[in-house]
Amino acid sequence: GAVVSQHPSWVICKSGTSVKIECRSLDFQATTMFWYRQFPKQSLMLMATSNEGSKATYEQGVEKDKFLINHASLTLSTLTVTSAHPEDSSFYICSARGQNRVLAFFGQGTRLTVV
Amino acid sequence: DAKTTQPPSMDCAEGRAANLPCNHSTISGNEYVYWYRQIHSQGPQYIIHGLKNNETNEMASLIITEDRKSSTLILPHATLRDTAVYYCIVRGFGNEKLTFGTGTRLTIIP
Image (cartoon, rainbow over all chains, first blue to last red; front, side, top):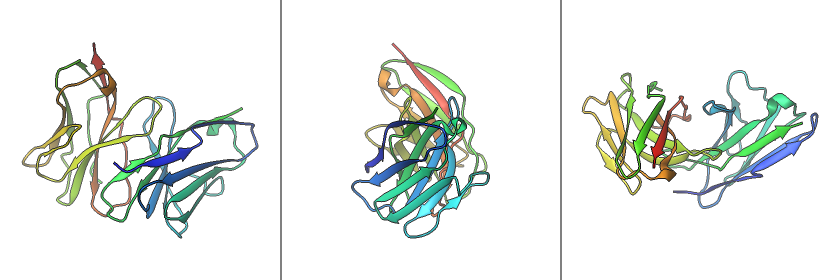
């Protein structure tokens, strides 16, 4: 399958600071990227969908000013958690889909811990 | 997208076939059935997908009933590395989102 790389794999930050997570599609052009969040023992919850060059579409209840998503190229999307708080600690996972719109591939996830 | 129902957990002996069921009784004609799995602390891994015909790849087989209201993922010779949460997802072609349910936690027993 196609390769999606997410960086960093884990990050610890202080409360009130911002953290940026990168998601790259290494061997295909990702016209659409998705960001998910997963709390312990729960399933993946979609946060937002972004198409290259367009503003992201956020799911209900997700604060767009807190979770900034940029999808400026066909191989890179970033999620910035602004003014992070301990309740933002979670496993963040990106997914990318190419123009064929059939399959989506996932990054390895980023474990964010806010202290 | 149609909702899916999966058993919360299953056990399977190592070396045996693991058969994971999924009910999607409200599936519509243009919706595909996708299977992903998530090994602990990793991102989901694509396994297989199908529309109405049975499918097989190097990882698994997907059996879809004739009325398309249910399907079964078959891992032919389960290994310990197959221990994971398996998600059955139904999505229409062209629909943007993959919506995850609670999945089935499969444990392979030595």
